[in-house]
Length: 195
Ligand code: SF4
Image (cartoon, rainbow, N blue to C red; front, top):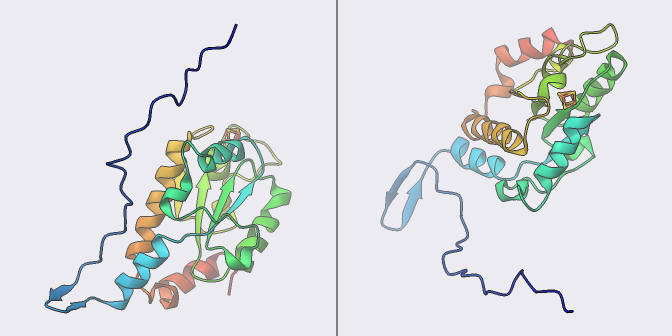
């Protein structure tokens, strides 16, 4: 007996599927001109073209795979270009348990990334060591690199990871172009032994 066909037998109504484009930054508009500040334009471009570097060591990395899959689709936020070359990426996503031995490796990867760079600690392990309060596990990656956003959960659901990426987008969008040259930022890096 033939199997009943259950899927894709009805045409989907795609009439209201629009392409969402990023909204224009705040500025002044008149007939034939639009003026805004460089910060806002650069922030808009950076925000919507984040290249993540997934540093996945354990289970949270599996959640990230789901986040990249077609159902959750991180590509919707301009982040589909996942790279494993630190020099080309601007968002370090640390996902999983980081043993103390791995700490210097995380730091080295961070150092190889060019400024401006951001860091997302995904899950309890990366954020605080999680359930592994042991001699061998780093109790949070903020002991070796500065972290911009923490995503709670063990593991965090893909929605939570996406929420973390959106928070990073907010930071990226609103960051002053001068922040990386500020004394405060230099002091922050110095506190991590980074010149
Ligand atoms: S936070 Fe939980 S799910 Fe994520 S790496 Fe640690 S133990 Fe695994």
